[in-house]
Image 1 (spheres, one colour):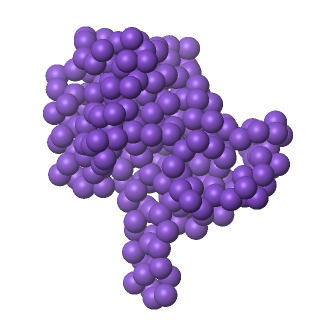
Image 2 (cartoon, rainbow, N blue to C red):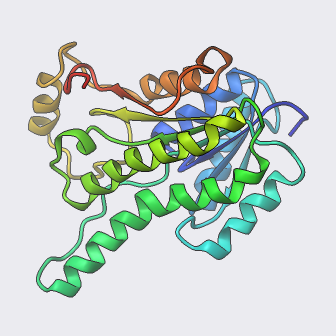
Length: 249
């Protein structure tokens, strides 16, 4: 990696995270992609760097961001460099049993850990290194935060909104912006695994006003704007990127 601007993207190995990483490389950033699957991260880092013609522009960092002790790996990878952008993309819907109250508690904790705690711990770990002024903190939420439908996943994503408002207030005086990107249905990701059916896909497309599913690059484009120099007056906002499935409010 060089001496240019630095971005850190969690959940950067596939889908939206990989698209965000690629877009930021195209915008001139050196990018650290963070996640639990080292082999996937390494393959993605090599591929994006080659596609963008910038050898070593993307560096993989293997860490489970739900474990506080593993955040040191990310901090060490950043080293003495200043962090310009943090994109908290790690998370997803985690299924679980609900037969007992203990099952319910475990299911909820797993979703809160994966979607909220990962963002909190990564942001707090990198907070001292954020560029002042000019730093950007971005949280990837979900349409489920606004319309429900995901149980603990919806609740976890909605929690990111409230935290973003607090964080924007705390970091604004230091010249750092904090915003949320809230995707709607995005195809070409691992989010649904083998749960998506042709009928489910069609239903979600029909719910949009534009008649198509989103793709990871749609979300990456929103992140690139909010991470860029033209968004310095935008903070404490939730940007819906959902094809009109949920109207702004």
